[in-house]
Length: 388
Image 1 (cartoon, helix red, strand yellow):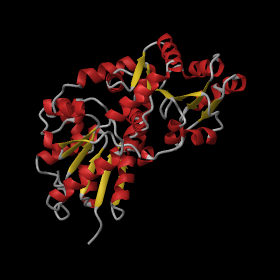
Image 2 (spheres, rainbow, N blue to C red):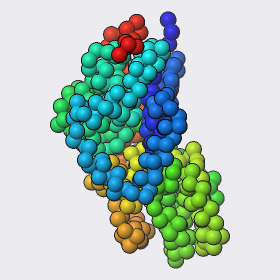
Image 3 (cartoon, rainbow, N blue to C red):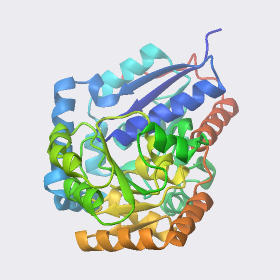
Image 4 (cartoon, rainbow, N blue to C red):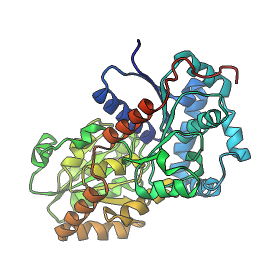
């Protein structure tokens, strides 16, 4: 008898969907080492060139016209699963996708991106797909694109998201509040002094971590670095430029002329170490980034949140007391000064993070997913109908 086979769909439109998928895969293999996992970028199955074009267009819109994205997000948030818009989306590559799934015969499908989840949920609802379907919502808000009655299990980050799904007709028994899955690496207890030492930073200075996302979506990063590098205060900084090489190069003069220590990095795989070394993170409000910071109990300043899901994520962080939102440079400066001068605020934020997000999110999510598999009849011989 072959091992359990799990098919995971994510998307490259923002790194968070992939990171959530990889976190689940890591935890799944830790708990069930024999599992076979296939991880796919769902649009990459159809056409890599089109997939790349959509990704570039999305990132460009977020950077250059965030209000346009926000308007689109708001205008579509209340559409129903059977709307004309959703029906059109569900027909994208439908036959090709089902044939691919049928060829794999997975025991379970996990989706960390809403479009593919909606397509498969619709097929599940009409009896054309006989494979359990799990959807992992990677934001702290509800949007119609995530909500489909054919989903067998929802993994969500907070009680508020669960309540939003229930209000829109999803059975509460089909929802598990586990926290948005982050890599189990973030649950490791690391020594802050050792983390700073490994980065060449001083141990007695207040440390800011600046993260703008994999594609450098956060604005005014150079200005932030200049302030931290030259302000008359015992502080230091870490800036992660991701894949934004233009930003990385633009910081040459800032690093050379800095009075305070500044560590500049490009794309990294040790964010858990960077967060351990830091007292505060200044960042965008991607669902995975804020979940990682919550897991590390790291206070946040969300700077100019992008309208739409990221603004909703920022509002959630502020509401639970784990961070602050700065809409202007002056507000950001005020928050930085306040946190430097009032360390008790930092401790209060850390406590709020620990209360709202106890950690081990990927492990809890995987256990809920495995329970779903064990409770449902075997689907290995049923699979999908490739003729749909």
